[in-house]
Image (cartoon, rainbow, N blue to C red):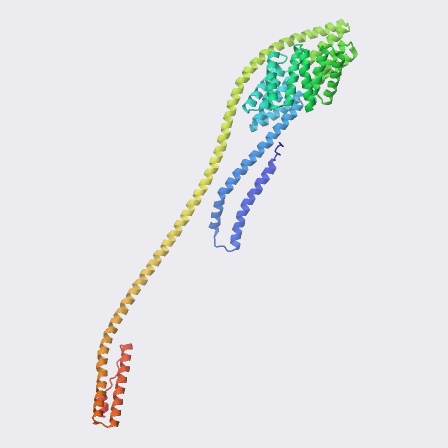
Length: 535
């Protein structure tokens, strides 16, 4: 699985800025488009739209902030992994530098609460201290690492720490050491961690070497070398070759032992494994002394002391002092041998005292470390709770802001709606008043027209009776004239004249009646036919 590429702070900030500008400009663009197209809206409408989008922008900003924090954590965790790897590779070359890099990784891992990184950093620091013979510090770091790996259920890390603790106890209590190796080996086989499996074979072989079970040791070391060659681990191959050379030396196969040790020495120098070079030179010096090759033994011892001084390993220096005693004793240079023996006795006595003190210190450190680990777990749990509370508080705050904004929008909408309703009510009231006025006018108009019609009807009735009387008179006259004509009592000319007069009289009365109907104020002159007849 390929690692996630790191995201720098500048890159995250630029992304955040671009997205923010996009959100803001998109709102501004909507505002400009509405103005340019003469859309029926005002500034309050645009503000309302921006208020609607504000919660979305806030949510977007929170998501972006959370995403940025996650990218930052990923970048820092990758940095921790890189520092731990660098520190582990430097354990043979410079244990002190390995410790320094491990502490850098630990500081960053603690800052971001990267538990696996904390565990691995403590393991690396423990390895560096074990190479510097600081047993109490090493076991303390190993126990911290073991506790973190177990809490995270990181079985690979747990197996590695168990193997490291076995290495630490190997010179103090090989039974306890073998117990740790066995636990690590079972986990390595279960998880198919081939490099750790090979390392466990190597370490169990070294336990058998300490107990002088060289045949068993050779079997485990051969398996270790086979696995290390299979996975192409140069450091593991070098260690396996070195220890196989020691075993063959103890089995009195000196040439084969020399072959393995020379190859191991060459590989160790090629890979800058300073501590291994010192140990291999010690084994070569012991081999050369047994072969009575004193010149080569001196060269090996001198070179080995240089590397022991380089890695600041006092235990290795003591072993070389012992080898010098063997060399001078084999040469029968007893005066120098006694000097080396006296110095060796003094240092060895203090070393034995130191070894016993280390046993006691290991037990005390374990007890203190268990107590310290409990305190650290409680502190870490409190920190996690505070962190969780912080994120919950931030989420609640964001939701509260969104709810407040939505309530503000709702209140403004209600106020605006109420204003609109009030304005509509006023308009309806005005329209109602207007309708009332119109109704009143209509009623007065209807009343006036009703009265007018009533008057007209009365006049019409009067005119009808008058008309019937006025028209009936000329008609009666015409009827009388017709009777006179039938009895030949009137001549034709006089008849025509009288009929003409009657017709004109009827016509005049009809016209007079029409004028009176259309104009009540009109008073026409009555036609008097009698006078005209008399004339």
